[in-house]
Image (cartoon, rainbow, N blue to C red):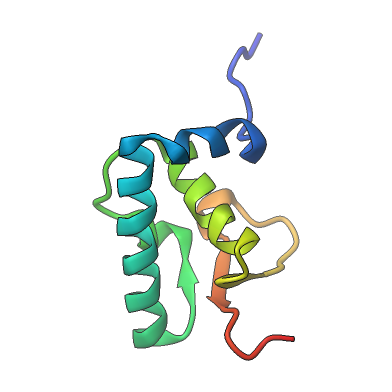
Amino acid sequence: MNDMKSYDYQLQRSNLFTEEGVMMVTILRDRMQYLLKLSGVVRIRELIFNSFGCTWDMFACVDLMVELNEIQEVAQPNTAPLDRIFISAEGIV
């Protein structure tokens, strides 16, 4: 039997408002902006490469950026979590 929990943004979101969480959000937001300027598109796999902390918290950082309308996910069917793709939300109405 598999007892592993699934990622749940609403559960992980509260972790982003701790001291460590705020630091993680800041670091990943800066990295996301840098990578978007370089290529215009970012995959989570590259965003979190060599990052520290809980992977689910890093996913929550990305989902927070979506919630704040800083980035937008490019929807793709049957995408693995690490292969989710994002673009800048600037100019999106």
